[in-house]
Image 1 (spheres, one colour):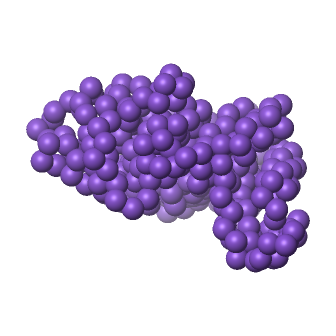
Image 2 (spheres, helix red, strand yellow):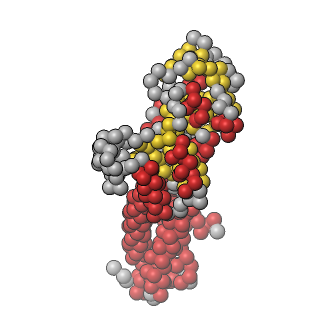
Image 3 (cartoon, one colour):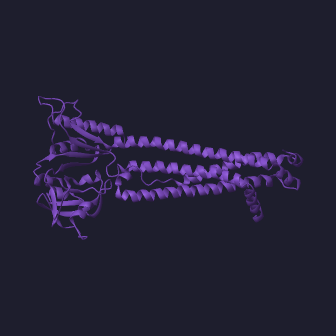
Length: 417
């Protein structure tokens, strides 16, 4: 067996250029397939990062000004949502939604202070269910709960950047009181927004916010997480919500600008459709690259057998069997394609791993990068199957001419030009 491998190595050394060209076509095919698949995955991950902080089947509803006069009311009237709108939506769409939350923003002077530190941060009142619509990761304490809302508790959860701005020297904010607009609120939790780690946000119980900051029963926005599985279902709920609110606030049916609604499922599915097309394009290019590698291997194997016709004649003349001749030729093909394919896989996976590490370093300072291209990676199993295909192609390409050559009589092979 050792002599057998030594003979293969000696043959490859005598034909270095041919071996290098064969190996390069295989390695390049595997390498490019991995790079293409990894790049496609990186783009898809970037797209999905744009939705990771929000429920994928949510409806975000906000009020605008009317564009059309209706029911004796002039155009340009500002629509104002209230708690009764929230109750009406929850009753009508009880079977169509999983979670609902109203939102009330604190506008104007909402300076937040703790001891000598202060800042102006986005502050709003929400309901406990908001955590399942605008998704956050709790790193300390808890989220707002139903008792906070029912009992008008003056508690707050703050984002990590707010904690860093107000609490110095690693002071634990849990249980401490911060002042929002001069009103004390107890910190009961710290969170990170996965969609924006630099988000300086404070959440308060909705009812408390309305009462303390003169909101009465007003709502600036409403958010619904539906149980719809398709865009058509979500669009149906969206339209019915719009009709309900339009009727309650005397908005003309054709006035689509008075009530704004963002359908996240529709946007998510549209983005998925785009990347499905990109994935298909990547696979087509990758397969074409593999085919080019197969053609390269096949051509070189045919040339290899043609060049060694006289050698095959000599081997047969001294008693070599047809099987031993075919095995020798095919062994060279398997050895070249296997080694080259392995190096192509190592190079491809190594480049993707390096790119992922660099992107992670960059995204630590600029999170926008994560929303464009993030964690490029490829399935190693795909590369292994591609290598098997190339090895098989090399075997087939080498077997046909090798079998013909092994069937030639020695005298004919020795006189072959």
